[in-house]
Length: 69
Length: 439
Image 1: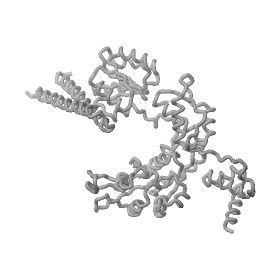
Image 2 (image 1 turned 60 degrees about the vertical axis):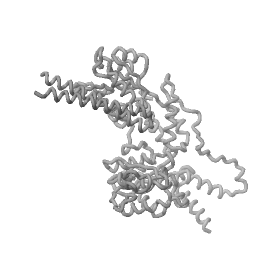
Image 3 (image 1 turned 135 degrees about the vertical axis):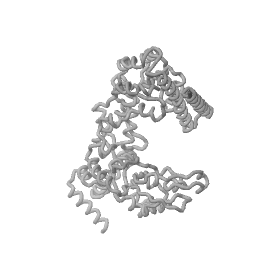
Image 4 (image 1 turned 90 degrees about the vertical axis):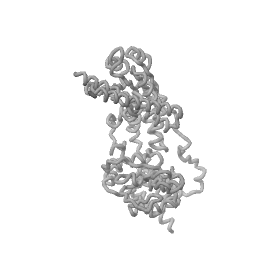
């Protein structure tokens, strides 16, 4: 497998994990809202979602920079 | 409660999924390596293991043999963020092993944690929902088959707990509709909200209408709408429902625009025909619109031969959910059949659930109570003989026939069998008493 392919696989894996954080914490926040759960916990989950979005953006930027000549 | 062992070395992932599973009402234990998992499996019993494919001290696959040896009823789901291993993992996914690819959503989790009982069930369900091979049920199946193919409205009549919504689901299934049954309970709405629920409203149509709402009739377009406890709908709201049924047009509250709706209405009531006629709970014109095709659902006491099948079905669900093998003995089935089940199938289901909770882990058998009676149990009339003095034999016979017919839901063939007379004799007696009353 080429270096580029390896790097791409790593990026895909990283982004998938970040998306996983987004999906799971969104589900947690949704369920807490449905069950009239603790507001602090809802905010905590949503902060993790935002943080994962920022991380995802950084990963995509690094991919873009590395692919530029 | 379903108990899950989560085996994953990613602590951030573990924290999130454990929180999610906790909110989904699962009991979760978390470990981070093959070694920890191996030791935990010896300490506690689980229904499901969520297993990471790659762990720091080996592959999750190394645990599968041990899990199958230690706890053979357990379900295993392999989790991974590597889509490339999806194909490799699918080779393992037979029997009790499944896989889950990240990103994980609640729906994906439910799809692996809640095992579909439909395909696994050994019990035949008519039209995908109905269980029973009794004569009473065999009489109903052709009715469902025929009416389902038409667009006629159906009125389901049966006692509380007899499974009216399940029958509605069966009709929806038999109709071949690809839409899910839209179901609601007319007794559950506040009088002022019923119009909005059924027909929808526009934003600002009334105080509190902060957004547009699609009503149930529109939701059920080209499908089936189930209106449970239809006789509990306030009588003054019934003309609006009648109008929709007559015109097939629905107008959202606050809108001037009518929308065409084409759905069959399956309604249900636990009141008898006599009660509907005499208690002013339903307009006559609405009754004839809804009861184009009435179906009388038999109470469980009139189809006791279905009790073993129903018990097996409820037990199968509980055993699958909790990974157990609890059974019901033939003597226990006889005991169950001896009771009259005034709360019908619902009461039987709850009784089996209670007996399952009480079941003996040594024998894997249900533990039934000595007495099933509840505050709603209909006690048989005890005839002391005191009130018979001075009454004629004819009066007593007339009362007996009336009571028996009531017990048999006016099924004269069965009533004649119960009374030990021929059908002809029963008709002769009924005619005689009717004539006497007219005279």
